[in-house]
Length: 310
Image 1 (cartoon, rainbow, N blue to C red):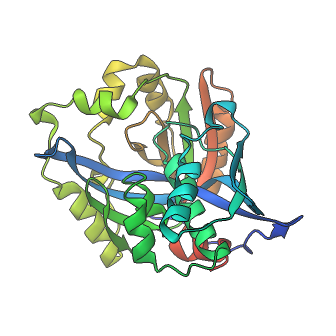
Image 2 (image 1 turned 180 degrees about the vertical axis):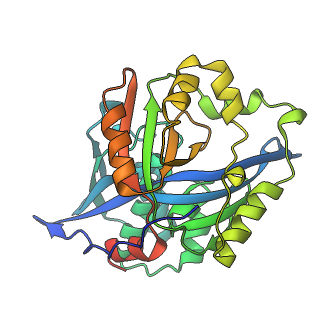
């Protein structure tokens, strides 16, 4: 797997009208293996995660209490991970004042792209700065465990090997800058993650060797064969939902080097040989029924730090 040379980092989003506006990036899973069920009832996983440029947008402004506003009414409540992250940090640091947060969702909800976890991580990073707490990364990672296993990854982004429930992270060298087409089918999967894990049998469990081989190739800067891009949930979803199987077939186009499932789905991604290939595929598939299509690219940890103003 190869990609184009890295893009120059853009300037971080600046304050506008007294608000600090920052991005919260999505991720894809280059590999995701379920190793088995743990004694605590959770599943042991091994995954290589990679951030992409598709992002939500959060704005922060000082306030007397914690206030959240979201462009999606269904997310405009105290169950939102953004609100939970702000309240958690305020409680931990004994902060008496608050913050007004506006969340503009662009990442599909429950699409396997980690949008909610990324929003929570962005909130921890920004409020750590705005409230002058100066907590180290390790402290924020400890707190993030109370919000969800993927949140710790988004505190740094880039590429990383995730183990355990996904909370044990080993940063990896940057994945080659690659253009990506995302297809998110409009499928309702109530309690998606719990349901899909319940579909697994011991026959679906693997030993993690594929994911380890992919992470080793990244560490050594070696080409990554398409056989190393694997997701335990992909065959299950393709069998259960005809739409996902249909979308998978539509992505089998010249210039597509890898087709994969992100997280527990239902979003499919296509890693493309070039930007022009990705543009062509995006335009060809843009008006697919029952599907939202995105054109994006992978983004490195260093680019994220620049955009976040570190």
